[in-house]
Amino acid sequence: MRKLLSIILLLLLVWPTGAQTDSLRLGFSVRGRVVDARTGRPLESVHISIPGRHQATVTNAEGDFVLKSDHAFEWIECSFLGYKTRRLSAEDGVTVRLSRENLQLTEASIVSGDPQTLLLTALDKLWDNYCKEPELLECFYRETVQKRSRYTYVAEAVARLYKHPYDGSVFRDAAALEKSRVLVSQRRRDTLSVKSVGGPTLAITHDILKNREIVFNETDLEYYDFRMDRPAYIGDRLQFVIEMFPVRSADYALFHCKVYIDRELLTFSRVEASLDMSDRSKATRMLLVSKPRGLRFFPQEASLVLNYRQVEGKTRLEYFRSTIRFDCDWRKRLFRTRYTTVNELVITDVRPEAMPIPRKERFYQRDHLSDKALEFQDPDFWKDYNIIEPTESLEHAIDRLRRQSRSN
Image 1 (tube, helix red, strand yellow):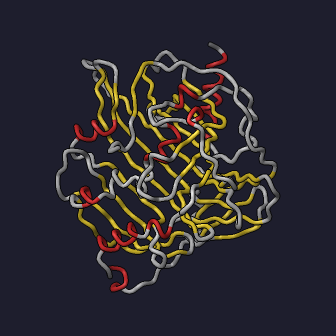
Image 2 (tube, rainbow, N blue to C red):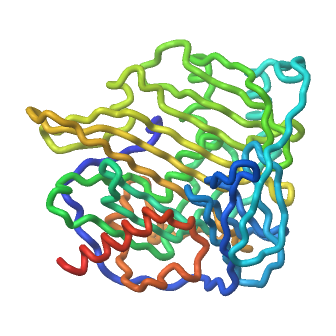
Image 3 (tube, one colour):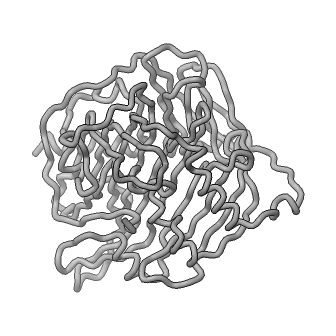
């Protein structure tokens, strides 16, 4: 349970084929882009939602989004760390300009309070502030692998997450696939492929507020020092910002964390965690499951971002992203190759009835989406689903990978 993210390095993957059942059809949608009002710079990972409903998505690296619903809607709401929340008319092709939140606080209010005590108080309030009943969440999940700057693997899935209350255990939570597809490079030079273990269950096992064994457990907290950083806004909510960094050595790699806690409610709004890379052998043990003989693995970065959101008095996970960068080379070869894996999940809706997921339908932590996913050649495959809009480079990569598969 101490793994941040496990990956497996194998020879070229086999492309699965098949078909699967359709799920909910979403007939109303709006597309747009979110930018900084002053600079015009696109904003990534902005939360886009329908006021009064559960449907939501996030912007991609170019600031683009698509938000879909099974009912017509008039308004959308956009919120982002450090910016003012905006509610505006749901017009297709809209450009949303977000302005930075002006933060004017005295120096005393910035540094007041003991950060460790504040963190422990917020942890103690998890049961009061988070959902007390099981929930069934709809989500969109994507995992990608890049070899240097070129995509060699893309897998996507519409999934369900069944989550019990925040009682400190993730073992009763479960995930299941609704629809999925995988695209893999067929180029002969791409002899090394990467598999991520866990797929959409990563958002369960790595919900580090619920799975306290990763960071926020009594033993591990003794290895950290805490510092109060300058407050920040997430949407229109002022946040305490706490930094955590290792000050003692453990038998395993620790983390550098930045935690955002709602100043009024003492709920967690965002957690950023990156694996300490000062001891590469410890980091490798945390990350790597297996690799071909003769291949050398050099971890460079492993990070997590988790966003939480309060809706109707309940706080739940809304967005999960993990990033791993590592270098590989074969013994006696001169140059290393940089690989980047990204696993991303956004909660797109909440189903009215929290029906448990049968065991035979569950996606398990040891599973690989590349083995479970089914290929769909239909270009309209995702048209009825809330998705994380692909960037232009990823769209081109998907088209290229699809053409490669047809020619083989």
